[in-house]
Image 1 (cartoon, rainbow, N blue to C red):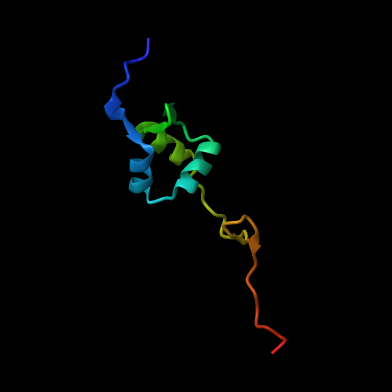
Image 2: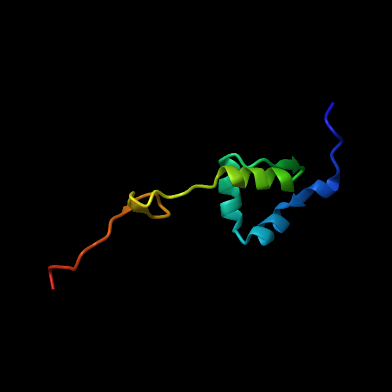
Length: 85
């Protein structure tokens, strides 16, 4: 049997947005990508330990040999001097 849940384990969507300094759109995107949440009526709640665990699984490192990527996912290749001037 799992231990009983307590309300103090949960944080509201508004509080989480403020704590992480993200927008509602970012939070919604994370929820679509698997961030665990609980809906109670029209309100959303998040278990702090679950949020921390999920964020940890999203951690990435960049290979210094690979091209930089833009937030849109495209490559940003270093550019040399412009020749059209």
